Amino acid sequence: MLKWLTITLIAVVVFATLLLGLGYLLKEHKITTTHLKQQLDQERAEKKLKQKGNTFIETSLIDVVNKQSLPSKTAYLTKQKILIENLTCSSKVQCVLVEIQFADLHCPFAINKIGASLLAKTAEDISKVGKCPRYPTNSQLSCLNNLCTYGDINN
Image (cartoon, rainbow, N blue to C red; front, top):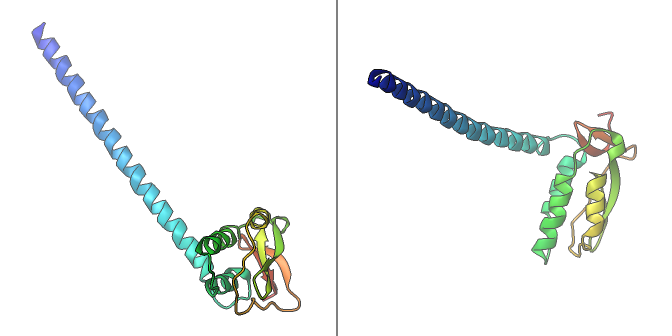
């Protein structure tokens, strides 16, 4: 009887050790996968924002927003965050062209409807901006590469 009790106890201990080991491995795998996914998402976002050679909003928006000299750093960060985080779309219907008013200019930007409503709730920007992005005369609002854009879509 003692022999079978010992064998059963050893089997239970080995089984419990295997289960705990597998659980630990799954936990570590989840942490690593989550970290890699976040890193890939960040690289994709940076790649989209760094595309050169087009006249669309994803490049000109960053240039204009970064050249601002704002007295209120909070308003700047809020408006910049809203503009950059609300460029995504799945169809042209989700995009709108909004006029952002600075102290000296009105600049048009293509943004999704959620971003437009958030911008309407923020305080007016009293900073000065050197110039607005220039768009060709035949510019159209579109959803290109899942980003709201305003420009010549035939390029």
